[in-house]
Length: 392
Image (cartoon, rainbow, N blue to C red; front, side, top):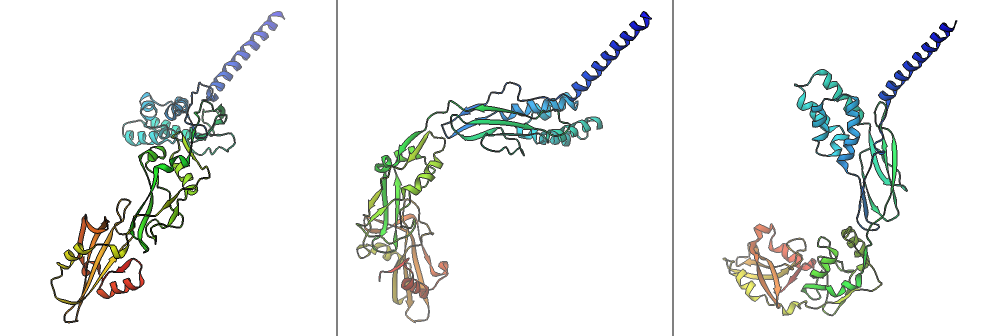
């Protein structure tokens, strides 16, 4: 009787041991890795309100990929080529490095190894990672380990989600942002002494340009890839201005554009309710424009005799105008002595210097054939288009 009792106890112990062993094996097989439980050291950098949070893209991808590779029994060569030698973390998580491995090794690996890698691709593509402010919603449709536009005190959550059968556990971890440097605020009016107005062209005619220029000091502050402030009510390429006229720079509209370009520099422009105005000066009166030498050279290219001549000054805003030089053309149209044909010649890429029309290195003479126009076209322009001004 006692012997039977002892045997029953022994059997119960053995059964319990077997259950524990089997349970342990099942638990081991189904165990999921929480990649956020391991030590994560995000890089937090930048300036307050312009800070950035970043977890090493490649290292974090390896933490995700290795448990999947172990589960699918990838060979050492496959793990090295797919994970260790990948160019970026994105290639790993999106399965691109594994797909490239199968393509390159299609003729050298076994069918079994091929199936293991294919299953690895299937599982790793179910993993989605997002880093986001706690006030925002995670996208979780890609692999994102960065977050931007942060300020001290913000909280960033890193969220990991995976699909069925994947050994990566769904998890989240939140980090508090601190240590971002303070942005230096620059009053925009402090830059006004480093801004000037550049005007070129003819006074009182629609044949001039006016631009706000920034000197090297101002460009060092705001950067060199930003456009300059525009003038209120003045076209950037063509307008009618007169000497003595007042023009105002649209500083309020320019500041957001400037601050966008200055992002990450540690500086920010602030508007301090002070206008920037300029007085137009330096434009020349059309009656005082000296164009004699250019006209003489232009007429020297006319080989035939003519009875009638018109001389126009023309300006094409979209032609060869740039920030440094305002370009003009002198046009001479003729009607020959027989009254049977007309021609036009133009001297292009001219500038005004000290009241005189002068050539540039790109100046050239072209005839009506090059322009595709006739004398009558120029006369029509001169009458109806304020880009043309009749001189003679």
